[in-house]
Image 1 (cartoon, protein in one colour):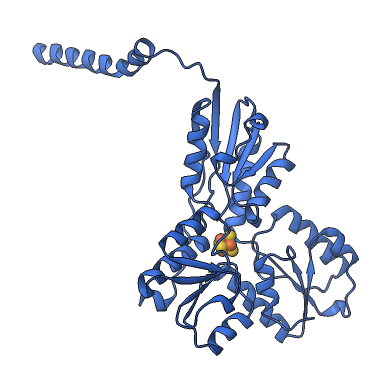
Image 2: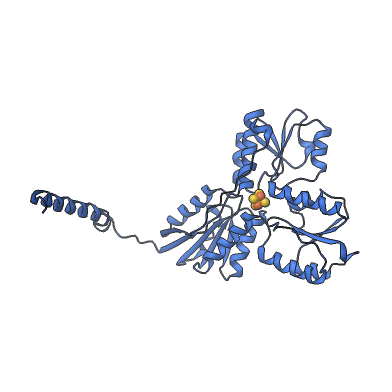
Length: 347
Ligand code: SF4
């Protein structure tokens, strides 16, 4: 049998707890007027934002600044995000289009998208100190391209004309040994000299669905074409597209945070649109078109692989200024991939 005093104490204690638990509701219903803002559920895709390659490229510039002091030159945007580039510029990075703009006595970093072989060759010829921030998954495609050419294959490269990654990969092999295929129509129309000696590779940041359709067309037309041993579209691109598909059915609008020249961000907006969800690519909160957004029940948010999480928070805060927001994050398997930093910066 229990001690009657301790039973009484327990009752008092429990009453106190119930009172304390009720406090927030009492405070909410008595102390504050109910919000007059329309309600909005914000559903945040996961995974989203920075991938391992972008994270590594940014760290490389930061470490280069620590090691060599400012200014450190960076050939092209280190990653496709103005916010990231501006922050690094503030730390002392100088972004240039070409190597000619780099003084002889300053180090230069090559961007995450990769560079043609001619670029490090030109840096060596000038005795420049350079650090290559090419994502290891892009470098893997470069090595595959070299091996295929050594095997005597002609490469059909699925990608987008003019993207720095495409320029970098084309620059790994002799000109004329690789042909760009951008669309299913290209794949249907392309004429090749030797259909028995073909291979295909892809850009890392493509639409998974579009690429599958192009690959189908190529393998049907050229049954002997050699396919890559593993998928070239990188884990980050595939995961972010899958995360948009996972939430699209619950969303009335989708905001994709990313730069207009970021291939993987553009693909995220496309994925949402194709699933019937009107989507907008925005660089940051000030780009939200409130008329277009209207008063939806649920807005999905995602961010491309080069968009920092701080911009996601900025967008959610902007939504809070106009809506009574309930914020949920989609369930996901966390990504655990990391890439080693170049030895010359961590030794
Ligand atoms: Fe590397 Fe993929 Fe990130 Fe591009 S998107 S930097 S390929 S991990």
